[in-house]
Length: 209
Length: 209
DNA sequence: ATTTTTATCACCCTATTAGGGTATTGTGGG
DNA sequence: CCCACAATACCCTAATAGGGTGATAAAAAT
Image (cartoon, rainbow over all chains, first blue to last red; front, side, top):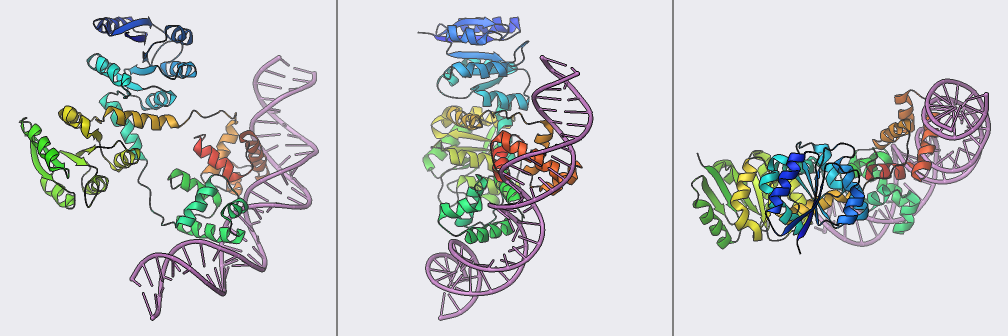
């Protein structure tokens, strides 16, 4: 049975262009195409598409919001976002909301079929510039410095970072409160901080834990 | 002038396979191929490649370490990692260290040329399963709950999370220490926590700040 | 074999934070 | 007009944290 595809895009020409393109292939069936996502829940619930192509910029409800809604009722549909802008904010929000791929419209016609195959086989199609954005986002997490914390100190810092009091840490680790305090002082020295919050904040921000 | 390519892979067959493949195209020039990355700095410094294909698993120094070294002397070379395993740890480490793409060897022969074009034009080629891994990593950052913090409370929480003491916050905001305490109490109530660390840890983890 | 690091425990004093209240003001919604 | 709420401020007591100093035994490094 064919792959069921559902399209959301407020640009009628583009929408019909995509329809045409996909109808050339018998393995795909366009089960619906809409200019806005106002009734997305009903439509997805009823049509049960395998793949959804979702424009970001639409009147009324945005593509990102639509994805969030869809994910409340359907975790399996593969969603590919379409957009004209490679705007960082939208990309991350969409992907975090549960989109599976992200194409720029200028690449869409070339890569659409390939991208649909890719999501269906468990991939995550994205336009090159999107991929680069995501990667540079990851590179921002700068290689953290090495503060030379001992195993024990890391253990304690981790526990501290989850919100445990000194007392709790002591009883967790079966050591005296004073020992915990000693370790903490050492940690402060190594991280060059002077309080719990600073230590925890540093630890969480630099992913030392 | 042709694109200069440098190859690191301990598997001689694969290395030569790639060489053959690339030599079919006159726009590429393989300027070197090595079975390990022990002298990577010297080699990169001397050969000045445009693109580096870097195996992850190599005897002596790993591909990831090699990337880190390369990035200390060259921020422009495009580096594509090659690996047999889609192991999450290595992927993130490599990308954070400055790799530009990440291919599984099983996809490499098909996609290599395309991927080289992609990095050169500023993209970030990755095998579909790698892309999916990265995206699911992003999706882990679950949509945070809304604790209905007031503007002032968010402001104070943010300040607290950067390591400021109540006193400092008070003087920063030009309000009394007691007022800060009142706000903090309210924040604890809303976040359902009972200490600074818990509040800060929750705030940082859920990106409320 | 000797030194350094790590992990452990203890005691001191002071500063900061938590937890429990109460109270005043201004603002916006019903 | 009254109510709810955010923001402000104060009080008191108990608990927790910060900073300093010192000590011991085992493990690791030299």
